[in-house]
Length: 236
Image (cartoon, rainbow, N blue to C red; front, top):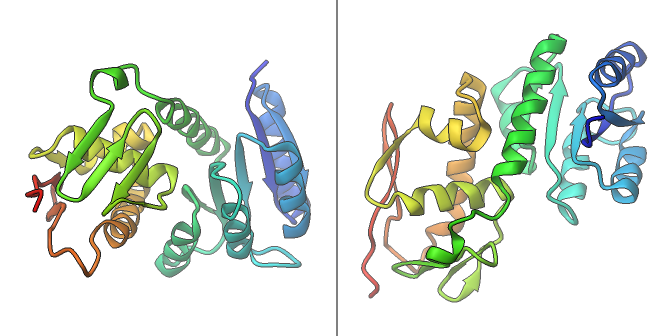
């Protein structure tokens, strides 16, 4: 029996039943919610491993559900929506979603995205080599790898799990250009085009939190069409 528990938030009965049947067939445990309020209640009560979330819910918009869940939990959220515009995807990812799947979708891709999320959760666990170097410092940036926290000017950065993982990946490879494919493979476990698009969004939000007005230092350099690099910054 698969130990993962998935919360399915979908108001369309045929789609909800399709997802539930797919999960049951592949031995996943699951919970069902028909609207946003029920989703928030189920999430806070059962603390599922992953949430499948539709955006067009009958009571409150799915983006609002993401924001409210993010007030108290970092549980992975995969949006499954008929909204296919880039603006909708960016809004959901900015609100705290981890992935975005557009309807209509195949059950094979749905399961693939779920497996990617399982690998990602495993990768977000503390690394075995933390003891080797438990603190990373670069300019005014400090990462406490043992505690899983990052600080700038002594103040903790409020990072999502994906932003923190990206920061650690870049930090461990300071000075090296990491390609989009390499980064998405490390963070998402795959190199789908949608993951590269998500990467750009997460890098933008990470930069906003990392590079403040009081510090002219540039920590993350973009190599257009290639990837990103963490630069070495002077302590001053």
